[in-house]
Length: 347
Image (cartoon, rainbow, N blue to C red; front, side):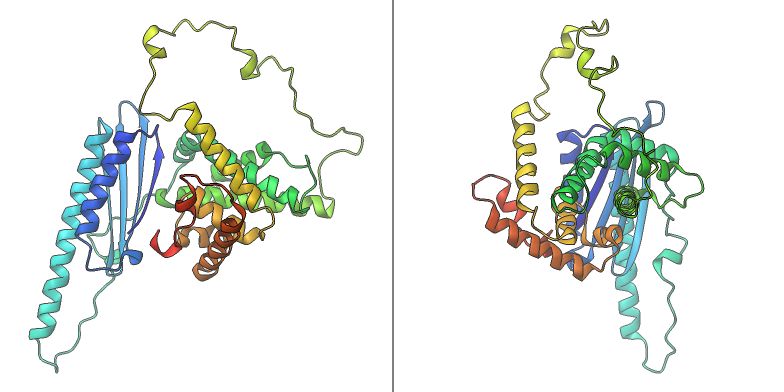
């Protein structure tokens, strides 16, 4: 089963384990379908303490689609309520499939076959909610670092492959352009489940437009203006604010949270990402983008195809080519090596 959950609140191991536990229950009840044809997407968000946690789930099967949305004061209660409702819908859907199968077997061959409407057009189907500007802000606030790392790596790859001049494009310009387009009221927004892939697509399109504009000489920079440089002496730099005391800081705030990653683990993960980026410098742009979106960002093949405007078969072939190139380039043993080399069809 293809599982993709987006978090618009701080992700903890308890929430992730809870979702994996319920996803396993869903998967056990769908063994009649091929795993690669079952897609479960969801989002966990918290807009305000008064509204609590909102959990949205969308299950797509070869025989239909089911959606549910529940809210509760705590994330655990909201996850349990949403998956309980989804399990009930799966049970009713399977009963409907069994009854229709028995009815066809008992019926005579001369009876006229009735046309059945798709599940998405029935009353039981819940149309997915369209993403709003608040949803975009919530996602950016919770996943800003991921989007920034992806844009920075893409700019570095394009500079290394001579597609872009060094220091000509900054990640802030790309992220600002993508967020501005996402917040534009005149732009048609996708449903909440596809918000993450849509933002990555806007970021890639913004980089492509900046790159083509620089190549055609359509830059808005004045001829007498100096090149953009980072202002390291600005008083609002976060690294210069360390001397200001925080009156809200208490002794309890300095207690280590064992559920979060240690600085060593974070540094090791960042180092592995840099090694992967270095190994894929010589790879084609389409192969590199597909591999990073699939392995590092966690998108499915269908979502990557929508982001890059390619077919699913082309995306899968690009991932296999990038994996083969990475297998020959990474010379050290590390716990991330085997997950990177897993087959695409098993993800």
